[in-house]
Image (tube, rainbow, N blue to C red):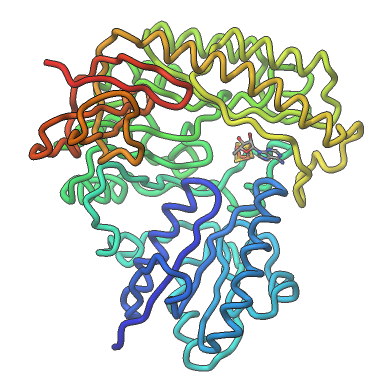
Length: 454
Ligand code: 5AD
Ligand code: SF4
């Protein structure tokens, strides 16, 4: 079979990054190899996101660019997968008639078959069925050679879908019901990654805390224990945790599992009880504070990150101020903050008292400015301290005033998920994949700089 080129544009979250790898794996047997050039590709896949309106607009503008490529290259196959494809289905081909394939979030197992049919018959296929089962065939678990590129960290999906139906969120509709993977399959996938040089895994799920509950598999903290036992693995991260399901078992895991990184992404969404209730989040700000305090008591240097939505329908200035108050009290190390946007099927679409876009923008700016100060302060607290860094590779940025010209700058992350750059004069030694001790000498909002020590 002749070589053909595959270009994938991955939009959205880490779940899509993982799924894109699965797509590449599944197309390898048809002779497709990855290329970073859309112009060179015989098959272009766009793995889309629909979490906010902005993501949707971005996708359509990218698809517009592909239309021009298709005019030049008639045999080019263009497929769209991911959350927006799931949401739009047939409508996507109506809006972009040059598309050949629209496949849903649960149709990765049929991708190769569809691409094969299209290349033979030049037909159009829309497949957005949602069987709500996890595909754990050997094909799905096979690792692509294209991705064996010596990376240090990797994502591993442990569950798909979400059953929470937060009122603003499209995920339950585009990713389907919550389904967990079998622990044995997760473990063997991680073992294989470690065998190929991976030192850190980030476990992915919309709500990892409810892992295995529905299927009666092991608990999430038991899964973490099993992963902690994998030899050669240095660190375990996970995302996302829903505060309502954060069990004391999981909180305690931060005390007794040495490989569990000292960081938790715990989306709070709002600091106002009224808004949390309208969002159907099922916890109060007081309960959130309680969980944060418990985590701090078992792991004193744990770092926190969060997601926050501003301008949810009905959010008054007083509600917004509750969010600001919570952000100041928790002192998150970082946050992702978003302007609320209506999503198809989401119940919040029908709520009264929508906030004008300009007002949402102003609230977002206030929040982000406050958080920037907190993040910078939290980072500056590390100046003079020694941190352990897992080195991921060379730094893209060259240190400005530091070091001699022939020095090499490496980059990695602390257990608390902060990016650290350090320069070394000896460019014969590779630090990639190693844990090194760094003394921090400079701190900024998005990164830290230091020197190797000890
Ligand atoms: N509008 C704005 N932000 C949203 N998010 C999810 N849905 C919406 C929406 N309709 C944010 C939440 C979630 C993150 C992934 O995206 O904060 O945690
Ligand atoms: Fe969306 Fe809520 Fe599920 Fe997260 S927990 S994916 S915000 S419905």
